[in-house]
Length: 94
Image (cartoon, rainbow, N blue to C red):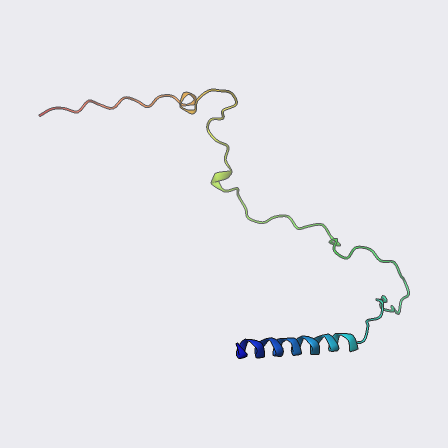
């Protein structure tokens, strides 16, 4: 119990020290824009690009960009969109 009490006293002392440092710290002054030699003023959004974006590189489209062979726009089934596979030959009995 003495250990827990000592830990609480140490934590309280550190908290008081931090609080006193906070009270004695200088307050910050309000922000002022930097002085330019040109004196042009203005402003604007510096996040907007100054030139258009470059065209994407990469060459020919990837195979997964090809359209699908069949598209379903109604209530039909996908198996009805393709012709049926040819029947397999019957297995010969020896």
